[in-house]
Amino acid sequence: MPGRIRTWPGLTEGLKRLHEETGSPSLRLLAASPGAAGRLSKSTISNILNGKRPTLEQLTALLAAFGATRETTDGMLAAYRRIVAEPEPPAVYPCDIVERAERDRETHLVQEETRLRYRGIEPEPEAELDWYDEQLRDAREAEWRRLEGWVGSLGVEELAALNDQAAAASGRDLRSELNDARGRPGETPGTPPTA
Image (cartoon, rainbow, N blue to C red; front, top):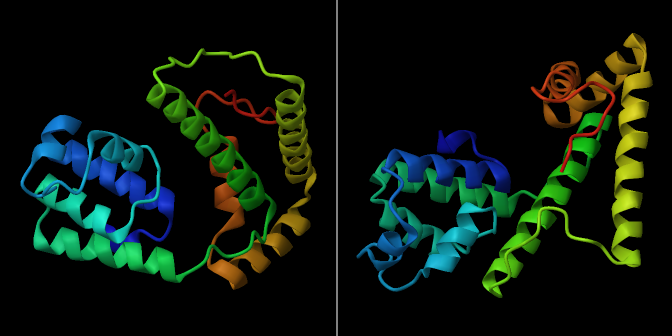
């Protein structure tokens, strides 16, 4: 599994899976474990499992706290080094642009909720935004809809040409990713996912 990890979200998912495989111990137990050796707090572990990028030392301590095997630890550390060494390639096709925008939006929401909880404030499901934040949200949503409309308007030949570009640049298959994006449960084609 760690050999396939090439992105920060992939690393986060791998750590979450490892947490589940170890019986989902509480953050308190993980922070107090000999493997963590005082290098991790409960909030640091929570942040890492919620998508915050760990340092190499934090990742090593977390893997030790999980009691990961030597093979898993080596694989996860190699994945970390691979991610750090390889900058994310530029978006070369429409689905990638939309996916990155959605991932950035979700990451921002998670970080904001974490900040609020850290300050002892329980986030509201639909917090009222000030004028500036509404403008930013509306601009992001309009851009998302524009990109989604553009992807939906592509013909078979245009889609094939973009797929060829994507395959040449990153080895990805645009057609399957577009089909996956359109076939996600709970989403209607042509509409952006709900926050």
